[in-house]
Length: 87
Image (cartoon, rainbow, N blue to C red):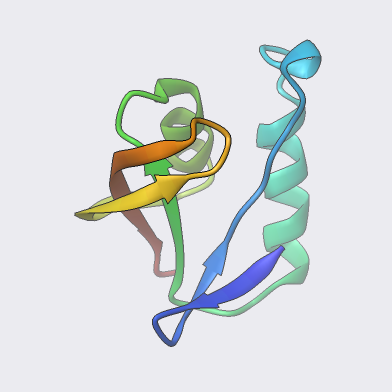
């Protein structure tokens, strides 16, 4: 899904815990990015969610900045990396 965050296009995704570690999110994001040509494209990942950071990195995103945001799944404010895909 692409949403606008502060006027910038941002990709977001969620995958159920029972599917973690199977490469599904990495592959799905790769296929999505082949169809969506919007660049630059941004994403956010909680700093301690290394799997999500790795998924984005495998798909060409680089850490571009940092921010804080509210994580609905955790019910609290979290520190995030902002990642950017340029090409």
